[in-house]
Length: 166
Ligand code: OFO
Image (cartoon, rainbow, N blue to C red; front, top):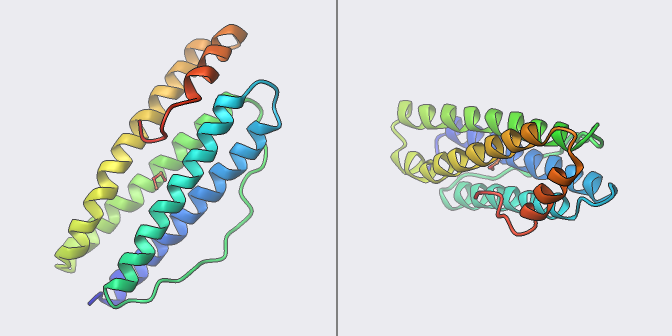
């Protein structure tokens, strides 16, 4: 059985994953309206789907452990970006915030001696490590590419089949 403290913290995380999904959906839709960004578009759509799965996993866990999952209202995500670099920088910064939030949840689970939740959260810890690394790598590549259009073409092509968690 979940304590009220853990239940509420997990529900905050549900909201964060939902916001991630919406934020990346908005990026996908923005990219879809830019010329020649098919790979970037596909990547953001897939990433949005993955975040929705992260949210669902939390919802099921909360409900299965005797809590009540809350389906949250969401704020309007950012709709447009100056360029691909800015979109990926935003994604990376967002992932850092999510990692921070997961780490705080892990701390809380330990403090509350909720080992089942602690164990459940390990999947998210690993996932965040992978997502952060990928986002960092993509930002590094974009920095190298700069304004070079042929570099951006290849970057976009590489993203076509890439899974968001690497
Ligand atoms: Fe849910 O993994 Fe990114 O945010």
